[in-house]
Image (cartoon, rainbow, N blue to C red; front, side):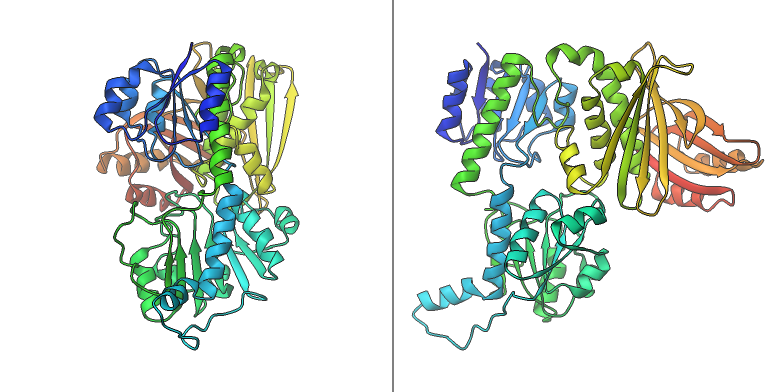
Amino acid sequence: MPKVLIADKLSPAAVAIFKERGVDADVKTGLSKEELLKIVDQYDGIAIRSATKLTADVLKAAKNLKVVGRAGIGVDNVDIPAATAAGVIVMNTPFGNSITTAEHAISLMLALARELPAANASTQAGKWEKNRFMGVEITGKVLGLIGAGNIGSIVADRAKGLKMRVIAFDPYLSQERANDLGVEKVELNDLLARADFITLHVPMTPETKNILSADALAKTKKGVRIINCARGGLIDENALKAAIDNGHVAGAALDVFEVEPAKENILFGNEKVVATPHLGASTTEAQENVALQVAEQISDYLLTGAITNALNMPSISASEAQKVRPWISLAEKLGSFAGQLTGTSLTGVEIVYEGTPSMLNTRALTQAALAGMLKPMLSEVNMVNAPVIAKERGIKVSETRRDAQGVYEGYIKLVVSMSDGSTRRVAGTVFSDGRPRLIQIKDIGLDAEFAPHMFYIVNEDKPGFIGKLGTILGDAKVNIANFTLGRSAPGQDAIALIEVDGPVPAAVAEAVAKLPQVKHAKPLAF
């Protein structure tokens, strides 16, 4: 009988599901790391919320562990690369908290607009300061959404019901999807300048960290009010304090903080700041939903091999896994290649499966390609929710299957379309050794393996370029492991794809980009 550890508090109904399905479940909450290390090798699965930390050393000690289930969306407390290396599936429940979190954002906005927490504290203290608290109406005001995905779209719907005008900034939001939501799609600077209220609904990525920086806050409308129920670190807290203190920002309502638990914070003690202790998902309904979902998902995997809502594996049956796995790896890497080179809004992707992959589970392959493509901007995307996220943002996805026609027994090709009319084309195959390879970029043929660190360059095919490139890399002590070249025709566009031993420093990339022959230079990571 499979054995599961429930390491954080879940609904009793979740325990009942495990037992009904024939899974032995131990409830042991509040374990220290040392206690967890002693017992973790006894379990096939672990169900957690946010308290238990599954670090690399814990996962290494979990010799029999097959699956981790997170009741909720965030998986910051799980070392996913370590889990993947150990062959452990990591699942979450990405949509169970959406309505609850959206409602909390709306609640905080209303509380902030009418100064309710301060007014409550004053009244409870026996004061009657009726003229002290002068709020603002939200009717007719402009709400700026930073992020219009699942939660953001629910907030937009509720805000429109409150007669607000909604504008949204989201690189993955298409005009068609914006029309469906009834919001105006804008660029970030436009949103900052126009919004009376700003609410954030994006994941924490290198691109979104401190998206509301001191510079961004300076661009906001005077008197703006800011709400964050997404992730701490999206707002520069020092800059926010300064903007509130000088009167530019009228107030902020925060459910998340850069350091949690936030028992101390520079924003605390200010009546213009409404603070709650990460309550976005804290409703009876949401807690019940995610607990039941994670119990079902873990049970399904342990008993049947079915995979649902996994962050490091697509939804495939156990019988399919061995044959499809190398093609999944290829699809994800091709998507990642295209996604890392995309600097504008995506509008569509066509995926061509020729030969061998056309006979496999292309749904799983497409999920993998979409996940790879979206991850550079949306770190919490996985191979299961990627199609949903793409649909939410109006990204059109099409598949073409056909028999083998060329020299390869099978290959996958991605054609990614962007809002400025440009496209990205990349193709790859899997050789007999099971390793994915790039065979075409921008319709230029080449043959290169994927590596953890690569440097992609498009240049004019003219003498002297390789020498100058090698000099820059050599002077910077960037070691070249492999160097692959391709060109469309003599004297035309050429591509250099370089495998290097570590990340390419930004200064080196900038120096290469400034070479006269270079049209595009981009460090890549896989």
